[in-house]
Image 1 (tube, one colour):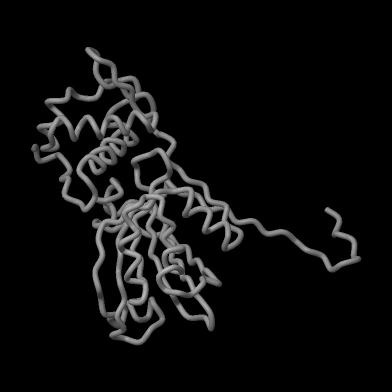
Image 2 (image 1 turned 60 degrees about the horizontal axis):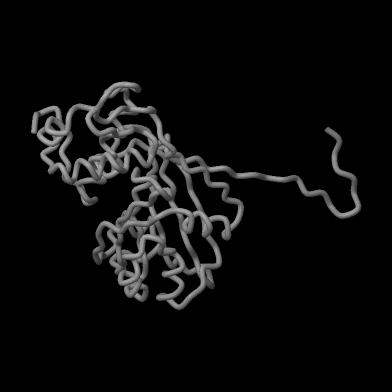
Length: 258
């Protein structure tokens, strides 16, 4: 592998990392629209992957409308941006649950942790409290470019949900309700701009420090008890959040004139 090649050493499968890296290079103009990607042997050497891994990565790029592949000609770049932006119109808890069902969740790892001072503040819990931390990516249906890198924290009674996460269509917060035995009654969302840190950038296939959107979501049950919290990091060009407000007038009064 040459020194200019990005390392494929994240938690996601190598073909997913490779397809995300090639898609990023296409977006950045490294492979111009209308040009051919380098030959298979050259790409295999550059990234240190097998032909099978490379072909699976390219197949996913084809599904996204970024490239086309023809026998005897090669792989031609068709567009600099595929259908990778997900637009979410979230005006209710039901809308948020629908968003999770319209995307695909792929878990990467899980571990038990004790909340240190910083995490205890984030989780609004006593320092030293035990939580299950799960890292995952979510994908828009039919694409292999991750929309978001997620760190999810759930209470110990939800431990059993790990056995259900193998199904990519799993509704994660439905599993929180199923295994925790308590219904989610409220979701709070806090949105802010961030520079994407290296660990998330590697998984998302973007440059460390590039602009992103961080969304913290808190899911609460009865008596305002926090059941789960997630930290979601989106590249700036992959997610759009739409919120609408409507003026409601008291019954019987005319609506204000324009």
